[in-house]
Amino acid sequence: MDDIVCLKNVWVEIDGKTILQDHTLNIRQNDFLGIIGPNGGGKTTFLKVILGLIKPSHGNITVFGNSPQKSRPFIGYVPQLSNFDHEFPINVWEVVLMGRLSKRPIFQRYQHEDESLAEEALKKVEIWNLRDRQIGRLSGGERQRVFIARALISHPKLLLLDEPTASVDSKMKTKIYELLSELKKELTIILVTHDVGVISSHVDKIACLNCRIFYHDSKEITPETLEAVYHCPVDLLAHGIPHRILKTHEDGDNCSC
Ligand SMILES: Nc1ncnc2c1ncn2[C@@H]1O[C@H](COP(=O)(O)OP(=O)(O)OP(=O)(O)O)[C@@H](O)[C@H]1O
Ligand SMILES: [Mg+2]
Image (tube, rainbow, N blue to C red):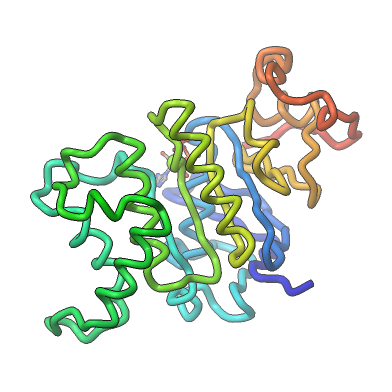
């Protein structure tokens, strides 16, 4: 199967501090990879490296066989929402159309094609009825769907989502995961989440990230890996994780960052 993202001995250092330590992994076509890890562990940084927004200090990364910058038109990104000003006076339709900005010359009006794609994306995430609503007047779950639609409007081949289920109730979480399960038939998906307890029911593979990355090309997580990543008792974290993924591995060593 084709490799979509390949990292080889990738390190990221910012202001002399190691943020990502020696990441080597391949993400294949139609993988649905979940990334878990504690706050400040480097998950957003990892996504930004794939997007080409942060350059590795050492090592090599390719996306679709090219540099991340060259491959950016094929990547959809749903950023961590805390970075967005919800009071900005803009409606759902305009936010979704903004996903087309990189495809058009600056200052050119949106074309009919852009509007058709926006309609398609809004219908896909089932919020077509909310298209005229101001972004600040949506619920958290509805807003997440807007940002997913914005990422989908250009038909990306790789979709990166940074905590799309944060501050969303369990019913809306389930709806978002169902939507992602549909999308994974046509896309490769990398999802950052703190939903440690439910993630394994939805994704095909799980990586644990806390400066170092623990990844076995499967969704097995061991108690040792969780403890190494979260630096706290495993029982707490293992609660809610199906027993079938808690098989024993021998490589749950500590992150030295
Ligand atoms: N531009 C930057 N300058 C300095 N430090 C940074 C920068 N970006 C990230 N960091 C640091 O890198 C570390 C990892 O940050 P990152 O945002 O990737 O973590 P995260 O795993 O996404 O956390 P969270 O779960 O809280 O979103 C943190 O210690 C953060 O303070
Ligand atoms: Mg983050």
